Image 1: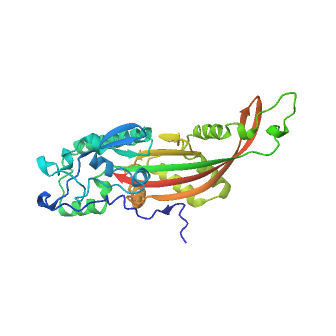
Image 2: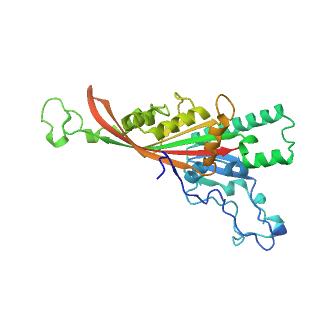
Image 3: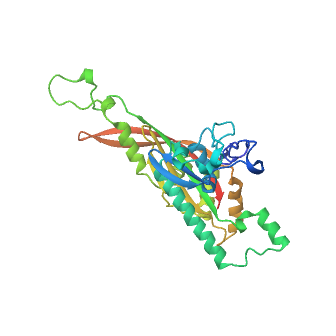
Length: 320
């Protein structure tokens, strides 16, 4: 049995974007897809190139489109044959809105980083204008190792579900036990403990703190190796999540960090990078429980809480 701290996620149909069969009248038998898509993310609209959308990390696309992503309409859908209306491009963009339950701030962070990575890749190509000229051996090497001609991004995503355990009779009286006179403390069940716990966790922005705490407790060598590998490849040990926020109406926090994969530098950098290439289009997960003691301020008193968090990490590599 492997001692890897992360397990491979089974392949999803997201990467094979759902295709529909072209209609008999489609030119050359090819289906027509819109070049741009309009996404509505919780009330915020994004106009995004189709190619950019399908190049997003698999782990993010799975969350955005849990039932799969279908671009374009099937030939069985009713439409007029006149005026080239059988082309998706002729349909109003507003009529193609795709509603997605996903945080627009997270999408902004991902798209901005993608743009930064693409600019870095373009700058590298301009600095080496003859890099595109390959002999057959060089071409074969590039095919075997796409890191030679593509900018790679490490994608680390955390889903955190948290639970608060309130010790009984901690100085807070239940409503039925409250005295008729004198000071009455709020019933813990009526206090917005979950909100305060979420705020406390939200402020813990360091990426590796919780995992390092688990390593120190369990003495898990494989998990320590995971941190070391990520830090050699682009992260640093004090890095913070690029995006981190509480999901609306849930006791759940989602965090994402993107870094550009290092392939040059001290040590055998490319060998470490090639290990991460195993996660290209194949996101992998690690899940563990993390428990801490916190004290919340409640009516000039401290409410002791045992705060449990179920953390799920997803690691993936993308090429742009």
